[in-house]
Length: 131
Image 1: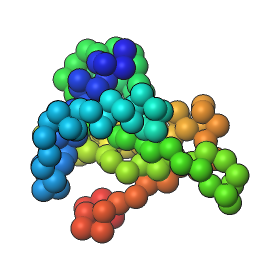
Image 2: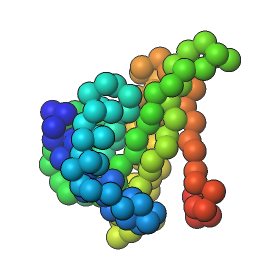
Image 3: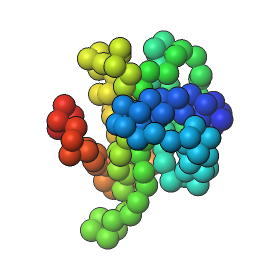
Image 4: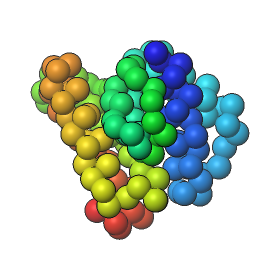
């Protein structure tokens, strides 16, 4: 259920934004996520402590520990749909266990299934660890 994804996603995105010193009102964040998901502008992938829940639906068991958001756009070079991973975050206590790799793998699988021409990732220039 989409509402379950939004409810699990909001606290993770809030922690991610705080980690990157981008504070915002929780309600504004929830509204932003809800609207993007509703319009199909982002696809959300969640990692949970007890198994993975990928995509915009599915089981809601286990504590959320990470997320990946792909944003949809188009390319005149490929004449097709492009997904860009703009946000990828894993709770610091859950890092170094392959969670980010699993999230990117889930995004890649979903992109193939959706017929996406290109999947890319953008990394903040200050994020030396991810680069």
